Length: 425
Ligand code: DLL
Image (tube, rainbow, N blue to C red):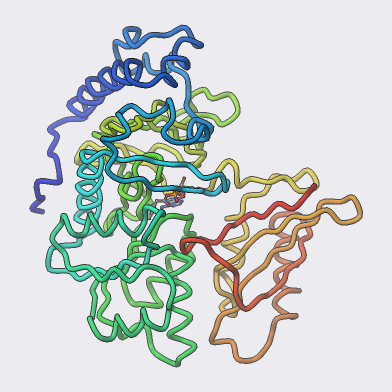
């Protein structure tokens, strides 16, 4: 397959590793020199940039976590003068606390190229028209995908998220071939078609690119069968850059190829913070290799994944994200991850796969209410029966008793549904 200039060609894995080593060395020296945050952090751990000689030495360096972003803006964390900042995004991520993320001109340039590379990797070409339904604005999804699509040379419909009826009109009118958005929003769009008795299989679309939140295989299947398209996953995070950190291809479903000429990935046990044995599930930790404005050294993403064998073009591959370490909640002693429920919900066609876990205290006991959206094509109200069935299945499969509430609509932010709302005191 012909690859454009956004796609580097490596002749061996060693070539990638040596590039990473070279870039990390530079990043460590620059961060120490330009950011008082890293100076203090390195000093506290008794390391200096000169202690890094090879990739294995990186584990001498301290981890960075989201608290680094909590000291206001511009902070001692930033490595470039504030006047060299070109754009600022703000992410509340899944934990709610806002993080201010600056980008230099070079950062924006690298980001655009990486999103263009991601799009190309899943078969998007300059001949495609892409409807971007990720939110535009402070969230990195809209503008990030927009710039990348522009860099690739595709046509873009900057629809942003929401106004679902209008999205359908745009698809009818402009006949895009590619749709991008959160899985939650793509399901909502699908539901709107059904509500209006329109067949979503008859659009011009051939490919859906989803990202920004976890998506179970049953949700992917619903999107693929619903729209009669292929659907692939895009991974990213505002602090690292935005969308375009890792990408799934149509022929390689299940694994994300990490653009590891720009991001060095480690997978560690979330408690001991030691590397997990190869192939085991753990927390993804990333060191940015190109970011100028606020480089991240061993940044804890809290996303759960595992290493897979490297790709044929020598990039690192990881499994699609399984969930977040901070999404895990313990209810009456049982550890739960929201996506355990996703697969069970996905088996009932009367439900959308959009749901939220709300945890409260009732009579001094933890209580979990699973709120699930009903599908728009369900004219008859089977809510009570569905609630009973779902409660029974969860008790059988996960071993806990939950309250189930079928609702018409759940609220969302940037097209993402907050999967866990913990209201315990
Ligand atoms: O969600 C960036 C993005 C936009 C990625 C559009 C892909 C497409 P944040 O708002 O900072 O950035 O949220 C980052 O979202 O740590 C994951 O927990 C989750 N996430 C992002 N992509 C995926 C994915 C954007 N493909 C957080 N699968 C991350 C699962 C994802 N979770």
